[in-house]
Length: 174
Image 1 (spheres, one colour):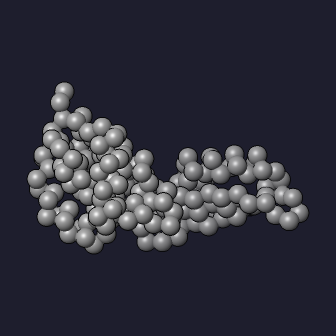
Image 2 (cartoon, one colour):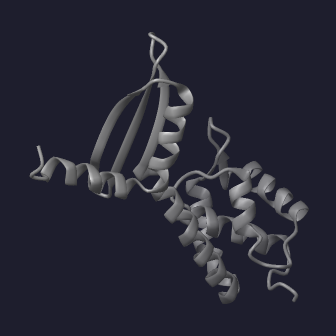
């Protein structure tokens, strides 16, 4: 099935469209994945267009190597996005919605492991929602494997852990 994007200028419009809608600065691979929503785009054309957008200051690269839309890119992208085929924008919006949902989840659920001076480990579990912190719990763990396993399990189902902790605090059992 042939794609709807016809030339490199449209690829640039699409990249600007995407970077205007990603909730955070994004790495190369993310922008690539989101841009490849049209069958007519290939890696080499994408790479060239992305580099051109940086060179022309429509995009910038931050200190973490992530791509950020500039004011110039936002203005020019907004002026040109209506020229993108509707079907491409719809596919793109669907992919962006999923990506942004993952970003929000990563901001809301955090689990970290750090070693203590005595050789044990601290596992820190944080859960937040759109309004702020919901839970911030630190637990001592005897070894790194145990702490990493706990962090992994927390990331998989933080709401379950939160609910069980609340239930323990509110139960009538001593």
